[in-house]
Amino acid sequence: MPELPEVETVRDGLDRFVVGAVVREVEVFRDYSVRRHDGGAVALRGQLTGQRLAAAVRRGKFLWLPLSGAAPDGGRPAAALLAHLGMSGQLLVRAGEPADDFQHPHLRVRLHLNGAPSGARYLDFVDQRTFGHLSVVDLQPVPDDVAAGLGSDLALIPGPVAHIARDLLDPHLGRDDLVARVRRRRTGVKRALLDQTVVSGVGNIYADEALWRARLHWARPTDKLRVADVHRVLDAAEEVMREALVQGGTSFDALYVNVNGQSGYFERSLNVYGRAGEPCRRCEAVIRRDAFMNRSSFTCPVCQPAPRGR
Image (cartoon, rainbow, N blue to C red; front, top):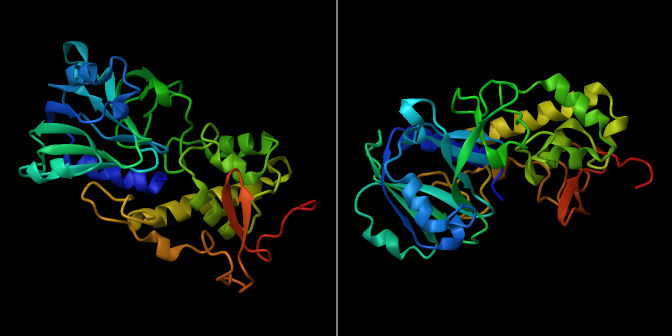
């Protein structure tokens, strides 16, 4: 599933290639991909056509494009196109004639654009596994009255995203407050990292990588961690995600691509995730895999000793 660096790579591409464009026409090829939109495909077309894509904004793994045409009297945007990529969703920018692209077996929604700064003419939502979706939703003020996400100064957030915490790349995240929230919880540290209401954007891959760098086992109880321990793992998570951003995210197959269809290559730099049975790059102990929340956790048994009782 795409994690924060993958979604941020897509957001950056949308910001450069389609922000400022006006939606001329909307084609929905699979109604299920707009299932979260009130009124379905017909209503989505009506609410998007003629709207200007004013910005590309991200909080955690959620991505939205405020619609300037939705604002009354030319004021600030009141609605946004919200995109959730699910497990396999892609937003691909196209130029030129799209005839061949209509044969793509997983094309779900196409936005025809006018006036994109890059000359782009189409924004395609492609989704093989169909867990992703698009919808137009109302924006609402954020309680702290600062920018709701990366990519815009607007202190407005889509209603369905309002419960999502700020992420580690957000300049408005209060790190000390986050450390206190983590330590107040009675859970394992990896569960806390994956809880999007505590801190958003960290998924299974980067949680394992951050814990390896911080030399903490995934089951360490959060209420037993020292302040310095929590800071160390949060710093490691931010560090590993910023490194992944430089390389375009982590790509394990053709599903994880940016808006130009290019894959990321951070998988080559993974130290622990997916490396069960291989030597730890730090101490050469054998990496182990444990079942975790219907997924897997990868740890070094020497660098990341398990808490007592495990």
